[in-house]
Image (tube, rainbow, N blue to C red):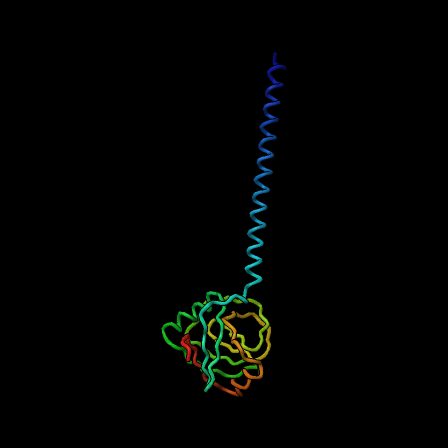
Length: 174
């Protein structure tokens, strides 16, 4: 009698364990697929990373020249944009290292530092409160703010000149 009772109980237990095992396997598969999709999306966004730009343009007045720049799509560029919506910014800039002009902002902005190799026309936030215009290359950990458009390295160097300059940043076309 005990054997006849135990056999169905064992069969029932095996069926339950097998059922749980296949559900766990399906759940693991679903979770793995979700993780894979999430990872692919993050990799795609990262690969776009610093190439993503906002619609808003930045204008940089240097002497008689006005340069147009695309702003990066990050919280640092948005913070700069918020400042510029209140008023234009005038920044005194000095040459540093024969590859950049650097000047202090009136406030610190949030940073989104990443390892960057700059090219001519890159607009960079350094240490949260330094606005930098690159006219040559440099590799360091910075926050990208934007990129000047439609100007060659030679043209940009000519506009920036030697020594100290004053630039005005605005969101209003001059």
